[in-house]
Length: 197
Image (cartoon, rainbow, N blue to C red; front, side, top):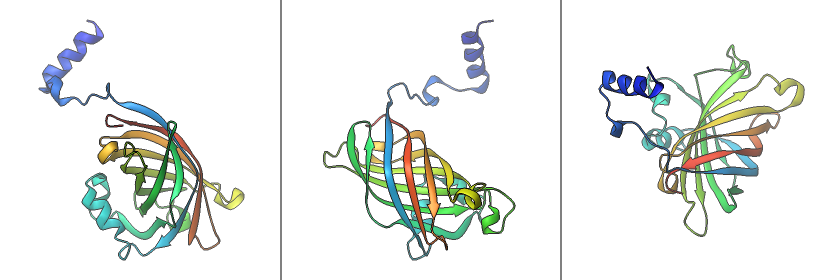
């Protein structure tokens, strides 16, 4: 039996129609890069990190089951320049919070990994690259003691406006000051795909 026939049979068995399978054939994919983004530690409640992320509906796994949010949150200290493809954009703001999916030893856990949920607000003058991106991030803290940096892989799980239905990934290097009240993200590079760009 051919692969195509097996796929059709699987769809029939599962009771799915072609309309229920998401199609990304019309998505436009572009590189996304940013040289530097500075984050500052914030009070999660005052900065409305968790209420904003929950209201977005873009990271539902963070809120089910309850108890996966932490009191460790960050927000950007100001706007940062970025490129989507060849289009100059600004990361106007970010909000992010650590979750309990993996708790690194740095925070009293047993892992080298830390997990984060993030919202990035992106704007540009043309209006063609404006909206919010939502990511689920994994940070590797295994090198923090020796190199002072923690590489991360961020998975784009959704977006709004021009980034509606966005998917993709990007890598970034992070380094914190002594008390982790400030984190510098550098060398953001990856791919962003969206049908609305």
